[in-house]
Length: 345
Image (cartoon, rainbow, N blue to C red; front, side):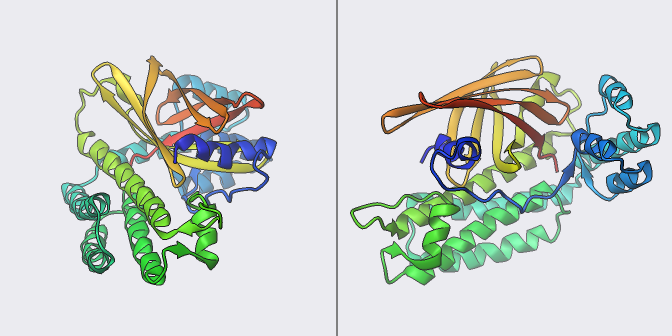
């Protein structure tokens, strides 16, 4: 299944109800304070003392460049709050670049163990062999995770492990049947986008397992990307043009609804390539047009007799992304705001 189907299901329905049903937005991600959050609290009349306390007790992803600080000041943010924002940004950068060698080694150990699961599911593995392999890898990964501080790296490794373990439980619960029924069937369709097939519109077990493993591999790839970023963070000669490279969590919002997905960007010579990842599918090898801090890319997919085209254009501001996502399926079109934060630690 292609990534653009996720956009139809999770995003377009928020505005136009194309498919007549809704998808629950993710509620499992840690809240990260941004400049917009501060502005909203100021507009609502929150005291500077309360705002500062919230900043100090939260994960933050602030843009504190001189121009932005002046704009924040003009928007009513107090100098005291601006100081706290700058200090929080400095602390976050220190944390993100100061991972100890032992933590990075623990992450490599966990990822190496997870790679065994990823490889086994891609080449084919039996139920008899899969369950004990999950148990073995689970022990190794959890031991490694105990040595890693809380953050995006630890969370994504844990998420990948959880997906592989969930696949084992699904397989165990359905090993006598080739198709999925009951509550698991709803999970397969609504959370993982598994298609019902055949005259009886059944959800096949193999399709469900493949969808779970895809999401497990997605989380593995994001974790691997974060680990690589951290390992390379000591390279002070890094090209500032590479600010787009890395792992990102993108958010599209409309009418109070929110959809989140991951994007990893790599650089090949002078080219930038993005992979968009979600439980519903991936869009691989999407070529990015980049000029300075601004970038854009387009992808499309044939949906029966319709072609959906999606165009994203945005700007990287420090470790955040702001821009828009436009879409057109030949019958309906629109534009929604899109934002993102870099998964740094």
